Image 1 (tube, rainbow, N blue to C red):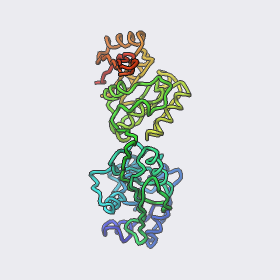
Image 2 (image 1 turned 45 degrees about the horizontal axis):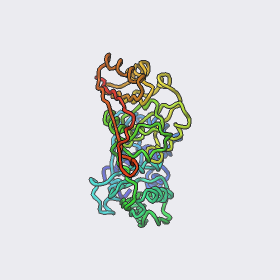
Image 3 (image 1 turned 135 degrees about the vertical axis):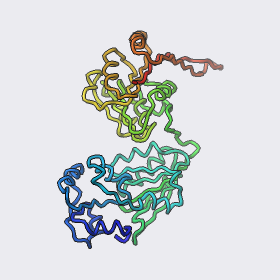
Image 4 (image 1 turned 180 degrees about the horizontal axis):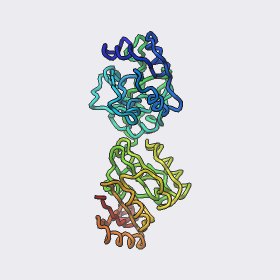
Length: 385
């Protein structure tokens, strides 16, 4: 309570009902009010709050309630006019001050209650990361991710109880991390790459070797062009029809914060590869569906982009185009004459842009070198206006 500004402290002291976790109630135990714990399941919180309408209700959280916290969830279901937010210093701001890091030059992430693997996408040379963790074991898991990717010399600092009498700090390097830390902590990572570190940028066009595949995948250069036409954007949803090993869907999700993707794939072995690729490359939220389009598209959230990597038909296009939101992007690739004929017919009716993509790589020819061409890809793309 001593850390609250006077106006906010007065609001808490005047509350009729206080909702929070055990530690929040202990920190405010001197105040007389009805006490409610977080409901189970957590989404029931909205129903609880709506049932308390008309009373002075305070929901206690740590730091800024709108920065990776419950305030955003409440604000999506209850009118802003019925809520007043009282932000305090966040764990990110306190950690930044402890480390002497500019907040404009780092990434703020959370893996609290979420898959830890999602931080992998942010492992880059010289990157600085502040991470809200899930528990005492999380720094060790992240240290392993760093070490496995050639970032074992990265500097790690765990900060706990910041601003309190029991504040703690633990420093070390990823490859030798062995600290036992409190369950509730914030992790600071300064990424340092070894000469042989894996370079996995967030821009499209990752090396084909980074993906598990049976050989039927959208190759690196074609994938980069495809993603440029699909245009990943923050929070946007992609339907990847015939996802295969998931290379396009994975790169879509890596390309923008909170981008989402649904991969539709009839083969179980390819869905397994797509799931493994998503986990290894830091986008564990890839949603995979067994089935074939257009039937498998029924009931899905409307997409911002649709990609068809194979099996384009008039029926698949009609279903995807009808579902696309305004300004949605539709992109299809074809390598067979039959698929190209379908594409040309659709282009004649709906317009858009047709492109031929030819890639050749230099390979050894005895003691010399020569160009080995890949299969030419015909690409059709259009934007829904």
